Picture (cartoon, rainbow, N blue to C red):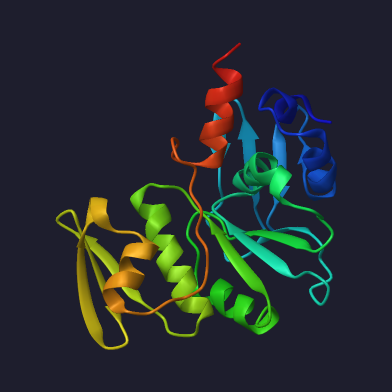
Length: 209
């Protein structure tokens, strides 16, 4: 059990699940390894790396893992599993991945090579960058890439040789699927009242002390 995670309200079972995949620095801050870089969390900061490597946690036997969760950060993965823990009957077939602050094309290609038969869920925030990542990754793992850019409070998407424009506030993976008439079958759940699952835990646990 780590005191930072306990203060955030992370369930003991979830802490046990993720314990092999992080360590603490000399000051007790959480460190999540991404190969050549790290995600670093303390209550005064949260640094997510810009890297082509991934943080990987859970069942690292890729043949056995059935459900793959692609997350905006390692700590968001921990927060998501803690919030959603009652809906999981078993944990031994789960695999969590974080791509760092900017998911890249090579990371997505790696996913398609290694997890073509898996069920994917996207755990990204409600901000515009999180919603863009939802579409970018869902399209990438479907092997039909989407080109996305933001200009003048609008989101522009080129997908299957067609152009789509959304107001920034009205853009989401679901909104794009409806407009484009294409379903990726990749859930992207969001907390109802918060920007992320980590923010939900902070609001419900830290602000009450």
